[in-house]
Image (cartoon, rainbow, N blue to C red):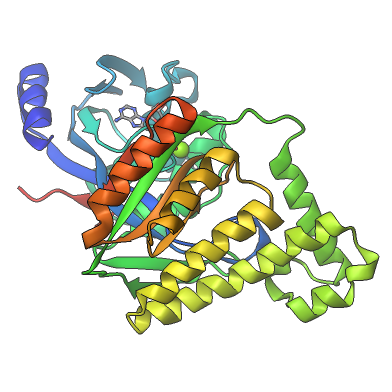
Length: 378
Ligand code: ADP
Ligand code: MG
């Protein structure tokens, strides 16, 4: 990828720039916890967006997307917003840095990536973080702190791409560190690194390639349930709720609200248990917690679908150590913690059985926990 980008940059702009990269991410555990003030547990992966960039002394940005094979030029004022979806991410990053008093001048860029688009690995955060990191380095002497870089990416999604996302994806992409997952406290924004070096295991994503179109905004409904229960308990969020407290009000709330809140409370405890297990190198417990999360997402929070339950079932039958839905649900991937010696057989079985059942093959992504945003060494 690096050579390809460098060759094209040279051809197009007749010079050489600096290379930057940032990564997609996985979330090992901690789902639907962010808006409940809980914990998430992401890590950056070995799939990246890489960009070569050089200031051009002009008042405009000239950028070429190798994967989409499109070239776009835009100015740096609000009215200069490009119409191409991918270019709006780059433009948004420039604008959000400027809005915060940072400096962005004209530059030339060529970029490419291998984070699968729309598969739940957050290719958009990789793209944002790559450019945010680069423009901080090239024009701002790295004076913008890393959390602000993540927020710049998040604001880009909100203000230029119409995606009302949380901070996890950009956080993971900016802060990612090889061999480490990060527990982010979504209430205090404190974070901690935990070693993730499973020598005997691999992380494998199985992408169902289904996305169920949903009526009556199920995500908002989940959120409202959680808020109702928190209010009933006199809490701001479910972060401080316990199962004892929840059981104490069980008679006063609907069964649906009860099970939604139950999942959130248990999920918070599961993240903490997984952190302890990792510190002890106990991957069996990590895996068991992943299955528990899947069950909770499927039965209590009710955000699974037949395809994801099917993939989870195949994993369980084959003795895969851990498996669960990753992401919001209703489609997308399962994330699987698989022993090395079981990897090939599991992948083969999951692909063939899924295809037989649903008529198309799922996609397989092996991922390794790697570094996030960075300057690429020559
Ligand atoms: P994801 O879950 O992967 O983040 P999104 O829909 O949020 O999915 O972001 C995907 C969008 O990000 C693409 O439509 C495109 O605009 C941009 N993007 C991601 N990767 C690339 C790439 N390699 N080249 C160009 N644009 C990309
Ligand atoms: Mg995205």
